[in-house]
Length: 133
Image 1 (cartoon, helix red, strand yellow):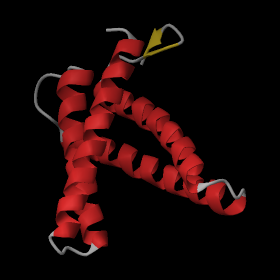
Image 2: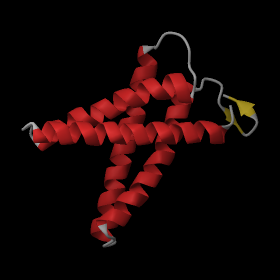
Image 3: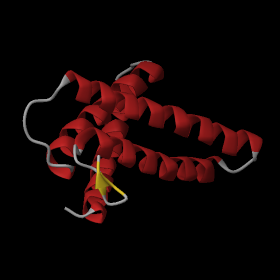
Image 4: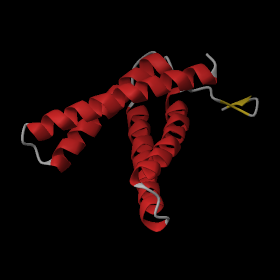
């Protein structure tokens, strides 16, 4: 499968994940949940969907899931979340960019980090410069 095709599939999964996150967050906050708890739950819902769809559809991994794979996937997402949060804050507060532009740039950077990291987690024979890892 070409990298561009898997990247497109990864992007589609990301759109679905964002929809799940937004929908859960909205429903939970409308239901009276504190917004921080709603954020944790809704992000986790998107993360669970991301894991399942990226593993089975985007990168087409078969067989049992290992603890190492799950830990690596969660680590990639925590790193992505940390980097994008810092970038968002720096662009908005330090460079005085609008919040929307800062969020857009941080999201684009996050997609790149998350794609590379998730690909490394799920694709066992990743090619780097013509060599397989």
